[in-house]
Length: 242
Ligand SMILES: [Zn+2]
Image 1 (tube, protein in one colour):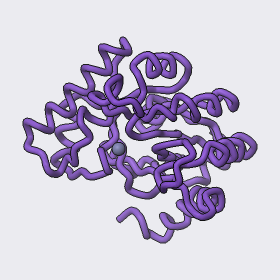
Image 2 (tube, rainbow, N blue to C red):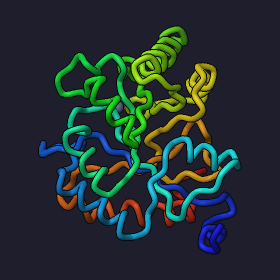
Image 3 (cartoon, protein in one colour):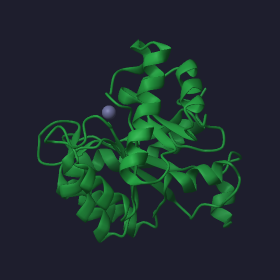
Image 4 (cartoon, rainbow, N blue to C red):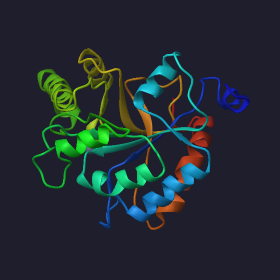
């Protein structure tokens, strides 16, 4: 472990988990332009960030492995086809790993979502495919039986299509509570991601991990830099975690 990592925090290395949705030319907040996405990946690459997998994050939080310096977990929610068409070539260019949380009943069904072939190709080339439930329903509106179906069936479906275990999920629209988190654990997931703004460290709830959302704004790249730089400051003053 390097000196800078020790100095990070008493709760261990702070891990930046970025959250994207679409990477395309739609002028909406969920769509980051491909050229902006490229600039952001270039920034991370040139500034010593190292992309990690959810397994690497989990192992470090469990105390079983050390992370590289400036670790970043790049995540995408929903499983849009533009992740394959636009984000994947850019990630490859920088030799970056990433994670896509897919809505299992949408893949291969709706045209603007990934096909299972695309998901498999990405999964075999450094892009981990994980669960974003079966139907993307707001989980706080569901009964326990419905929650179990969303969690277990999506996991099984993705495991069947990809041929390996699926251990991580992201809450649709970020909504969750401690009871839902308990069901996520029961369904066999090792960790879950929210859209609670902040960095992940050893003080984080493993079933409610923080992320930093990246949106298309008036000045997407300025917003990106502010978001990734200011998070630790917000946390230091206790504005995020309580
Ligand atoms: Zn979503």
